[in-house]
Length: 292
Image (cartoon, rainbow, N blue to C red; front, side, top):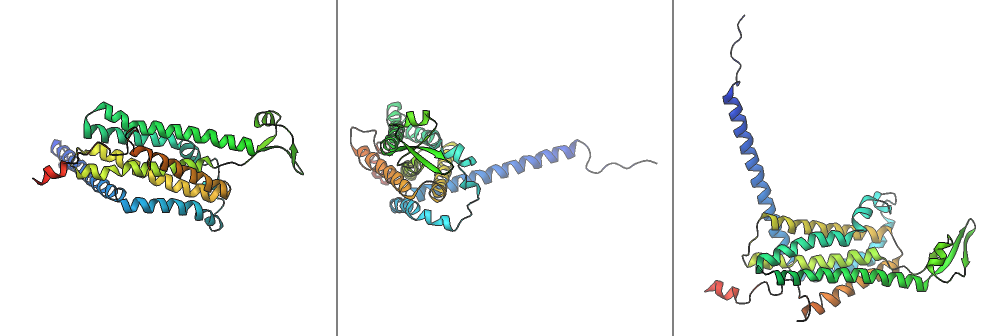
């Protein structure tokens, strides 16, 4: 018994399938590009609002001051309550490294595309070097405070036994515990990174307004920074809910805010500084030429 021809078989069907897949890929790329451009425009407008940046400081203060009250209303067994959770180990403990990587790429692209000058780009990137020095200096200061205010204790089944060992090194060498006033370095670092990233990312709104090159790679890097900023806010909230004592968290956030004020709020506005974000990138006469 003879079989009839198979419908859709042959080289013509394969070509139609390839053409259909090609059209589908083009549509998906167009949708992704549209979402990328729309998302970056809206995020830039949001972060570029001076009013919103002032409210952002109030938001961070509210998170640190009132966030610990949420510990009475959340599940204490959630994954974020564990010191060994994935986000705490991979992100919080390396928050400055993540911030430098993402934000450094953004600053590099924005400054170089706007000026085409290596020296200016290096000057703006030096703000991250200052930030690293602030982080390292604060960490050493926190350890010094803990050393000066601490005492050596030996854990026993009945409680803690106080020892007269003079410093942390000898205490730990004896297998005991050193307990002093511990400023929350995680709260400090997350607060400082949040303020720093919000300040740096705010430049993108003015960058777009001046019609400077803003292709998909730059917009993608900007959105990655926005996502990282959102993650830091979330992890800061988790930190103040689940970890550290109340005053330790408040002091850490206060030191982080003060560090931002000394750098971005004060020193970077001086001529002998790395310069504030956006400084020297947008000529003041640009708008007047545009209207002529």
